[in-house]
Amino acid sequence: MLTPKLLCNNRKVEKVEIEIEYAGKEVEDGTMSLEDMIPALQGLSSAYGKIAVLQNPEARHSLRVTGVGRGTFHILIEAWNFLVQNQDQVILAAAVADIMSPAFSVVKSIIGVARATKHVKNQPYTEKINGVNQTINITNCDNVTLEVPLGIYQIYKDGLIKQDLNKITGSLAEAKIDSATIKVKSNKETEQETITLQEKKFFEVEEIVTTVTKEMWLTGVLNSLTKTTNRGSFYLNDGTRISYHLAGDRPEEMYQYFIYRGSVKIRCVASLDENLKPVQVDIFEIVPLQSPLV
Image (tube, rainbow, N blue to C red; front, side, top):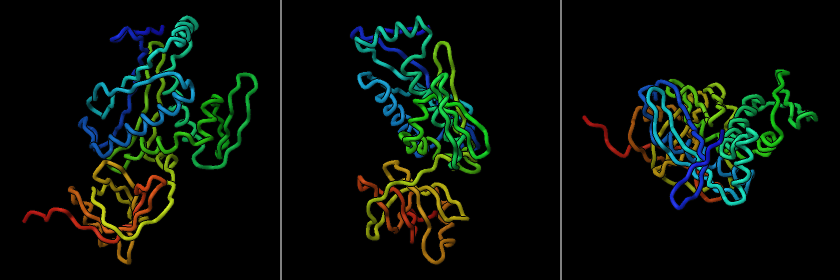
């Protein structure tokens, strides 16, 4: 049963527990790099905010990190839904009728969109409305059908949280992090979805590029490298993760810098988004900021 609680100033809040769990060799000791964790939190927060406003523009929500689990890496979060005056009756009715809470509904929608994304696999699909319960049946390229609530399907189709799910799955990497699980718990129900490294490609999206800069230098940390494409991830000093391509005639000469764990300077041509922030770069030269110890 839903149980609104009292905070300071006698304001009622409804809370649900959210977890993002990462599993793999790099996180098996219960720790995770900030470069990987920050984009994941940003992605969850952004997706949550977009759907919360969509479901109820008047509601106030707050996400708070409450702890970190051990073993695999767990980010423990509480979603606080501040109950405005006209929402108290909604929560009371939900408790009596066993309807899911607003905060739980938001995260369940995020999970539903992730599930639909995995199901479609970036391939053509067919859709059919189920008139009995107002859901959508999505049949994918393997002729497998998934039933999706109409609201969740609309969020998926509109691409409302595509960029956000990309941030949550962006840290998955070969021999490092194998999977990411999003989980939400209420008093009566638990909902979760796991995204594996093999499924990461279904969540990757192309950034919007509005202009290309002249050649410039950027400072940050090299993260991943796929040698077949000479592409990977690069973290700027503010924690922003961007994609890169090793350009030039002999990109393999830059492979040596991926064993260097410190910051580097890259000479590159950077593509910028609509906010004039780098979203991808073509790298022509890499220079370590600190000389190796002899």
